[in-house]
Image 1 (cartoon, rainbow, N blue to C red):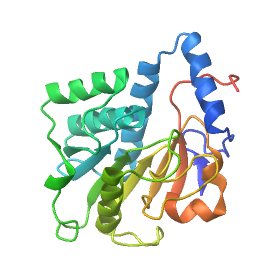
Image 2: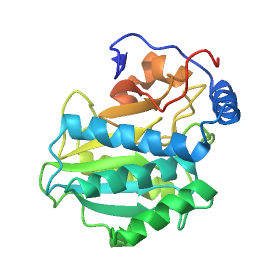
Image 3: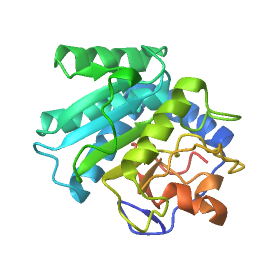
Image 4: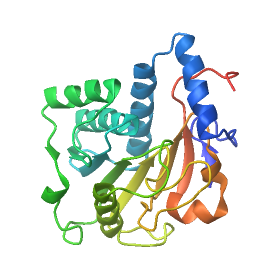
Length: 233
């Protein structure tokens, strides 16, 4: 299922390259990349909170080193501020992009716990109700998952516990923009790509979101407004 979270209408589809250009035009028009990241992460957190009461709930946010990870830091911060027991999982170490670094520091100031993959618990041992946010890779992903991202994806899928998104597992998985391990344009899928319950596409759907063969990996896809004005396509 694909819909716009704000309007309920069928959203437009843009390629990953077109989305990058839309963001560039939005930045030229005064909407900073930092604000777009803030809007994306906040919108994702609000969607999660609309679906699941997060107060006191364990939430693992898997952050990559790029801007998708930055979106994850924002979402983790908002969920933490709303009472969730958030743990940030640094899949590839510290973030590398300026805005992601800034948002990582904001999480550190709030003393949100951060862990590495080796510190994750056995996914088969925690109780039903855990929330997982997949913010490892977004529209920039192509090829195959790196070793650490593969380990993270396998853990996430084991934690979810079901290969069928229609059957809820132990954990509920929310992927930011695109399930990590999927190519946003072609739909090419790494064998260990994350299987999400919900995929939160930022601003517009990407081609992968409407490919039937990708639906088992994406779950329910919704568009999240990140503040970009219409008409920049």
